[in-house]
Length: 205
Image (cartoon, rainbow, N blue to C red; front, side, top):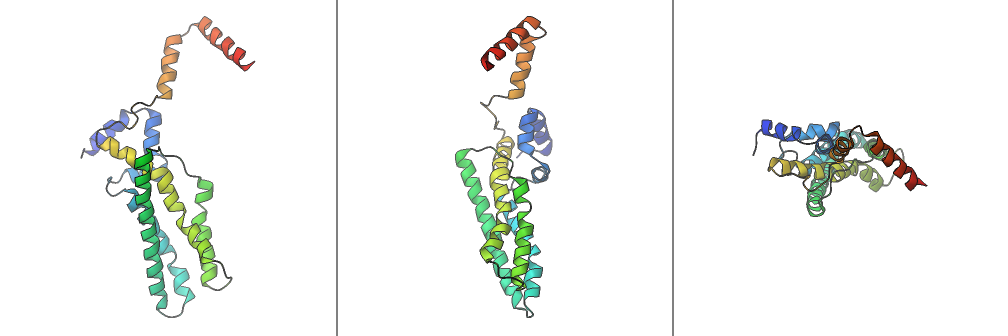
């Protein structure tokens, strides 16, 4: 395993677009600061399940007056965490097979879902209204595993390749480099630029 300084040097040697692909947004950047064994997608998924389990303590506790709520909460929390871990492992396997690069999940859809699921679960547990439990659990469960599958698992695979000294972007054309190369070849030749502009206008017609 290489040191953190080697890791930073390797990141600095990459193009800006490639660094952004590896580091991602603020949430993914926090995970990249962890050791790769700790930031495994299964662990990230399990951590999400743990957070959701902690959040649903109150609905379980106040829905029953006896201590029986604890056993139900522990059972469902264990199922939730186990499901998130298994989905994280599945994402690693699928990403390893298809070699897919990370994509940004639909935040406007995913971010409100746990809060909506929590609200529906609370309403159902307090008998204010009968709501199918599958809806509440689906809204609570989906955001974490979907983020892991779309964004973190592919990014984690690329980080592992960098850690092993491999170039995950080998064979891929860099758009920024190609643009700079084209600009350097054309330079300030106005005649060449006019020819290119004329050709573009001809294609549009």
